[in-house]
Length: 474
Ligand code: ADQ
Image (tube, helix red, strand yellow):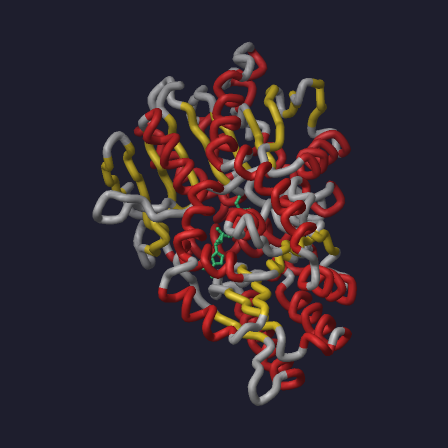
């Protein structure tokens, strides 16, 4: 394969000592970039105040160039907090009630995508393969095509793709659909997302599904498929094995005083179903009083997107709810819920997963959910914990050994917690083994390789329909 250019909203910059911060996705893309040589481009995460957006800031590490740019305050507000996180994120997570559509922000979203294309253009060579990530950057290929680029461009959506009736409630759904048609390969997390996309395309007459995973739309032919993202399974299992003896994990174990640990780890986000989960835990304790004082539920939740009002409000809600449950159920010698509001290093996180008897991963909707996979990978093969998993997480398509729950059904989820905590060793091992075998094969490297293989080995879609002239009218 020729040189690779990865474009994502944020870029995991290499540390000063030359290593990249660990994290499955970053590690896998980093490895692909090292293999082929290339560029990783995106937003620096900084605002340049009210000034004009700054030029690209380039950092060379081996054969990879990290290229980041600041954005103006208005761009950050309209593109990132506005359209991406107040419209696309809730729409893709089926939350029409939370989508706050504003034309100004939509314009900012398209403007920043054009700006990214302009900044990226001088770095692109004719044979480069481009891989664009996530909902922030859907219109990027259209902008590049308009500038005349004919390179292979792939797109991967990390979050769910909604059904037609949900997507069509967004006023600019047509522009978003059209934006996707400018890619050569559009990848989703699961078959359900792909099905929804097909529905959106065909139902409103935006295009056709012509078989073999190919779609036609807007005068172009492109491929759509699903590629369920994995984790760095073997490495994560090793972290967990080693972390079991680390000071932090030992302290955590001692502090448990023989109580069983139930763990939840999520970014603070309404899609993760944290409040419903706390209700389910409360229901579990209320219906199974023998577990009072015998279990501890640890919820680790770093803040995210605090600038978006819904997130700020959620932060308060979760803290209050944990406090209320502790007040109602706790005893002088027992705190039912421990709630931590910050990030934890991956090795320690792996050790805490391993310490837990039950992992609660109950999003209301999630593209994949890597925490579910990390929890499984971290378990002790001789004494594995049980995963309680929402049927609405992409991970549920593959992790069949979990106890699948409907997170809206608080009592049902509470019952699943009771079943998980009391499950016998033999059943736990059997359930875990099947999931672990799957994760070892379908790891993040395989996800990355499969997507890139499909992108480059795709039928060359030259011909008049894919020429510059026919799709310049975005
Ligand atoms: P996220 O919504 O961020 O990702 P998820 O897939 O669970 O959700 O990934 C979260 C990552 O952050 C995990 O690797 C987890 O370990 C880490 N993390 C969470 N809480 C942490 C904490 N307190 N400290 C340290 N690390 C923490 C989006 C989509 C998902 C999709 C991924 C990848 O929403 O559906 O699975 O992208 O495609």
